[in-house]
Length: 314
Ligand SMILES: [Zn+2]
Image (tube, rainbow, N blue to C red; front, side, top):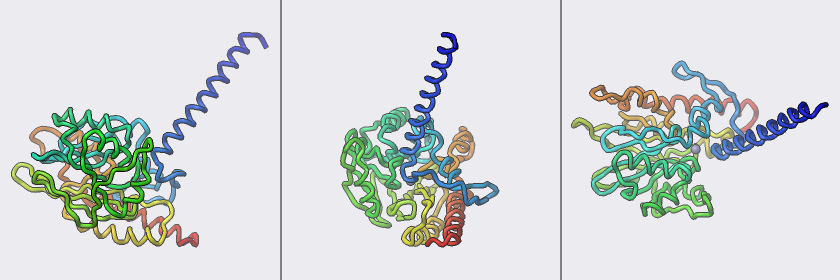
């Protein structure tokens, strides 16, 4: 073997090693993004809802996108009335603006907080005007940044009682998870004339919280639903089964004109955003789409339950 061939082989070996290293790092970062579901969910059962096929894995991929999607700013925009989107491509963060200060729903990952801050400022608001910080559920892709947001804004943090233990276990960089007030099913949070109602919709987590509020546009009032994830875990325990059996009828019963969710794909944000034009009807007003996510996840829940029962599980 002459020197140049040996050198080429060495270069190839080094590239292979660094490729494997990069793949391992990517795998690890994806796993941390999907912390609630390690190992990744199965590619079965497959269900078809409203003409589209889904598996547990495809739903998770739809929700999370790539690691880059999770951390890349999506253009901040007005959704309706005093409600704005300030999240990334695949992790929702909502800003509610009132004369007495603002409310933020979902801080997402701690590393996304500067991106959320940038989005808030690009819309012409001050990050320091956030007075209340809320969340949809105690997973790190939605609420890991709470401690940092609290540190930067002094906002009061509120959480559904059933999610408190999971939130307390979330300590990025060793920081205590801030919980200033514990909420219970049906409690309301009011600031500057806007009231949000916290609906306990457990299953995905024990304290999964669906928020509802009214927004005004062109003299009309609209019911907004900020949905918590309804994605079932791989293993359905009797407790989780009971939770989902409570949750699906609850979310279906909520008055809804504007469906939103903690992952933008749950309400087809990208498609709706691309339809935003001055003078055209607001694409986020989508009564026909209000039950879409419940339809998908409830079908998946029953398919998983069937599979589990067949396998002799719970
Ligand atoms: Zn989650």
